[in-house]
Image (cartoon, rainbow, N blue to C red; front, top):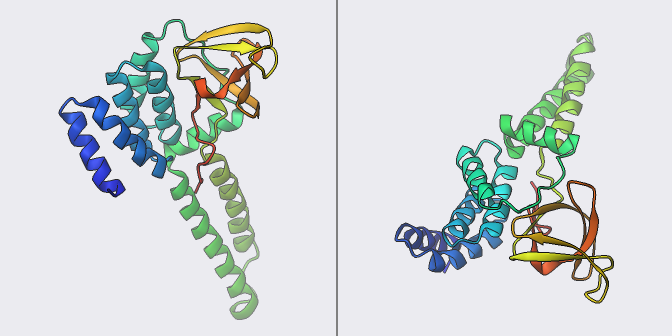
Amino acid sequence: MDVKSSLDSAQALYDAGDYAAALPLFEEAGQAFPLDADLAYNLGNCYTRLGEFGEARLYFERALLLDPNNADAEHNLQWVGMRLSDAVVEPTDSLFQWLGSTFRTVATSESWLMILALALAITVGLLAVRRWWKADLNWRWPFTSTVISVVLAGVYWTSLPKSDAVVVTSKNSYGYSEPSPSSKRILLLSEGSAARLRKSSEGWFFLELGDGRVAWFETAQWGRVLPPESTLP
């Protein structure tokens, strides 16, 4: 079954209220298109209907990372958050993450790339005109378009989705002093808790919580808001 057929079947099952059957089909499509905001939103809805709020939060966070203008995902994330009263929130976004979200609110990363390509084409055209056809062309025109292109390159790079956020998708997750289950347990986080990924080892995440506490957690109990295997535009 191709991805489109899987999506059509998943949506039909979801609309019929068979969320458990729809979920694996949505997940199959999500693996093929990990940066599709609509798919992340659909997965969040499916997990919400199944009462798996940690997974639901993960996918609503992903949907908003990819499309900050998705008001439905924002609403559903807040709804899920109210049912995760014991969850720990992650540290606030960095300046670059905030700027990236702001730029994606204005236009998608793909749109910024197209604008950058247009600016570069204009710059090359002005330089060519000044070099071969009109040597007296005011140098300020190609200089200005070059500066604009440099700025747009920075905007495009910043607009690419970036996130080191992770979410507890199991019912709870123990934090250890070392990346080993035989080391000392120092934290216990509930479903839907979030943190920042600082480094990883085989089967383990070293995470920082919003209050500055750090610990090692088993990766199987967490999900990344931005999949590590994603290919950004």
